[in-house]
Image (cartoon, rainbow over all chains, first blue to last red; front, side):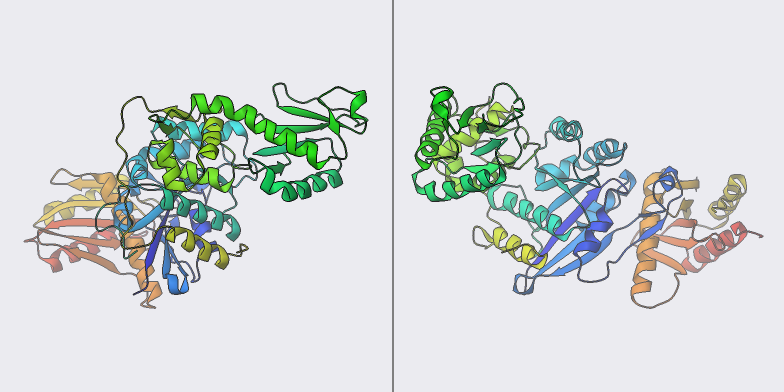
Length: 188
Length: 207
Length: 127
């Protein structure tokens, strides 16, 4: 049976998770978007409340399954639904928004324990060249949580940018040691 | 190692790139010509003949170049660049950098802990990225890094030194046992790279 | 435009389920994006988490039905050894609110579902 690889996208609402999956997926992404009913509605009309799902057929190298999780802390339980077999995570940040840093702080507070166990890449999206002060603040937040990860500036719509993200994640997997739990390899 | 050209013509820069390719087997380190001049650049070639000289940040390791170097100063080299002079200055630059590195970084029992990745990855070669990836999940000695990455010890030292200079590397204060190397299932080492190559090809990256 | 029901009116409707249907432990109205609106409970519980899970389950249910060309979602039932959860949308609000009813194992499913339907009808605009 061909291998199944699982990649999980997390990040604040509006950081670009759905966009990443739409850019990568061979199939029309399965979405669970609903209209926002809180302050978030000022920034975006709808938000994911369960997951986004997409697939990339890798031929003989199996299937890459793509999961995007809701950004709000109250949906943290969805990570438990998709965590088994996850090869790593992509943490997205809206680098063009004043709330981007707050969003990252929230994401790290919610997922720090998971991020310590798995490789992840921090991706600054929506800004072609985020100021160094913004990048430094992001790295400081990681350090405050005892996390270490590469930081990439991406355009979530760009397939080549996402290929670089995937390449970086694979580099971490090839050279790193991660306490992946038994039974979490998802056929990989 | 990163090399930049300050106020050179584009044709001069291209000529330098060609020279580096020709000299590759004679150079002690791999050099790359980059556009951006930042504090972390390893060496800057400066064109003294430019009609409107622009200042450079202090503290950079620089080599002056001019059409008539003897009219300038003893350390000035020729422009257009000559292979023999480039070979000398680049290898000297490495020697000068490597000496303190060996003393400060390569303590055989010291275990290095990565505090953070560099903010920008431009100019960090593949071997440096492998070292960073190794240190992302665990503290490691130089020997462990060499074993995990296949990068030459001298090169590992240079990368560690550069990371330390940027405040990104710490020496583990406690004796940290090496994390057990987890083999992902019954798979061969480097299989993630193969997967990345496959995905990259599907997404339009050149092979 | 979101048309939120009057909270007091909604609370009364929830109270009727909790007190009127044997075995019902929790009745809650959750917004479609997973926030608790009003909540009545005979037991302790985490309203925020239930609201988020209600939203996710409902969205997944709708997505599954859409992928299967199986029409609009009417209700969701999640039944375990020790309890059952019924989710029903409030009609006429464009999916704005979902009623979640958690009941003990002994509660009769037909009665729970019937009370839930009555409740959401009472909360529909113009009821």
